[in-house]
Amino acid sequence: MQKVFAPMCDDISANRPFDPATLTYNGAGLIPAIAQDETTGEVLMMAWMNAEAVARTLASGRVTYWSRSRSAFWIKGETSGNVQELVDLRIDCDRDCLLVVVRQSGPACHTGRRSCFYTAARDGHEVELMTPDG
Image 1: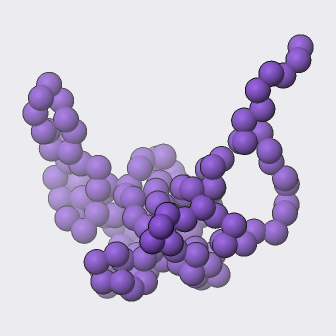
Image 2: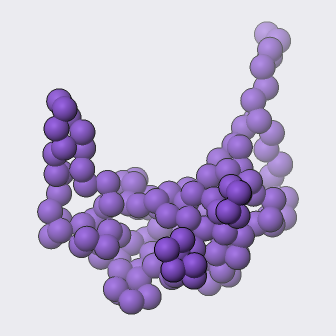
Image 3: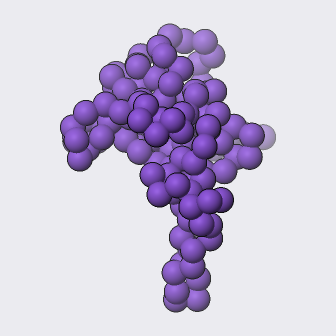
């Protein structure tokens, strides 16, 4: 059987050196990073990284993001104690989005909820799926 279409995702080179500069960043030099719980697979949050945040995360094992509002790095849990320990960093096929698999201590959301995705749009209404306690 002949392969007609070969998407970019099939172009995998095992064990090549990784350089954060090879990722595709937006005009502000940022890339979205989705944090996912290693055990449950739950999507915990989305934040932004730049090349330096990616490098710091890989070097330290503590997930480091770029705060657009403060124009500064922030290590998740540095002030709250709700640490994200890096388990795996995955790059999507277009190299323009990251999946950060983490070991999460405490809630991931600044509201005290386990996930930032605690609101659903259902039947034309917003529904709160979890309280700050869980």
